[in-house]
Length: 290
Image 1: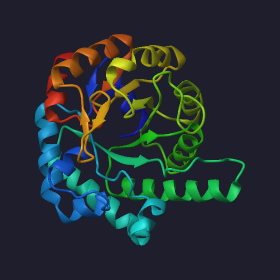
Image 2 (image 1 turned 90 degrees about the horizontal axis):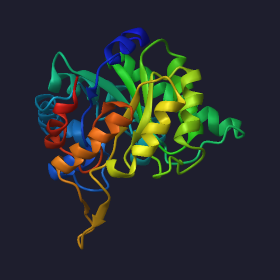
Image 3 (image 1 turned 135 degrees about the horizontal axis):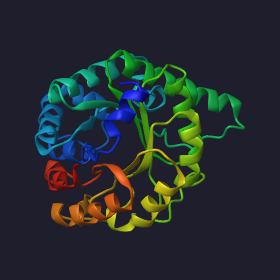
C-alpha cells in the first residue's frame, strides 16, 4: 500500500487496528524471557488463532509479530543473521491468519536505547538495523509498516528515514508517552508529529504506557498539531503487578470502549488496544467504526 492508497483508506473513516499480541501469546503458553519472534515461528497456531480472532472481532489491520525482529534485538539470542528470514516468515503467518480484507503491518519498535544523532556511528547502526528490517518486511509482502512503542523522537526519525529510503510504502508511527505527551527518552509526541510529518510518516499517535482514560488531552492536542490521521492504541488501563509478577490490567472491554469513544471525539481515527487488550476489546470498539 503506497502513501496515496493509505490516505484514501483512512480518509473519512474510523479504522480498527488489533489489540495486544505479547500478553495474549503468554496466555497461550509463551514463557517469559524467550525470543517472541522465534517462539511464534515454533508455535504458529498461537498467532494464527489470535489474529483470526482479531479479524472476526472487526480489525481492519493487524501487526505482524515482528516487533523485535531487528538485528540489534535478535543479537541477544544469537539470531542476528536471521532478520530477513524471520520477518518474511512472520509476515506470511499474519497474512495466512487474516486472509484478504485485512491489512498486515510489518511491526518495528525501539531498540531500548536512546538514539543520539551526535553519535554518528551509533545513529548509522540504528539506521542500518531499521533499514534491514524494513526491507525484509517489504519483501515479505507487508501492506504497510507500523513503527510502534517508540520511546523518543530521535529513534522515530531514524526509523522513518530508513523506511523512506526504500520507497513509497505507507508508514505509521506511535510513541509510548506519559500522560502529558512527553516521551521517555527525548522530546514529546507533539514534537514528533511535526518532525515525522515532514519526513514522510502517514499517521502518528500513541500506544502502550497508559490507559485511554488518561489520553484525551494528548489526542486532542496531537490532532491540532499535524494534519495526519491520529492513532490511539492504549493499554487496558494501568496494570497492577500480582504476587506472581503478572501484570493485571484494570479495564474491562466495555469501560475501555467508553473511554475510546472520547478519544475518537478528540480526533483519533485509527484505534485499537495494546497490553491487556484482547479480541473482545476490539469487538467492543466496532460501534465506533464509520
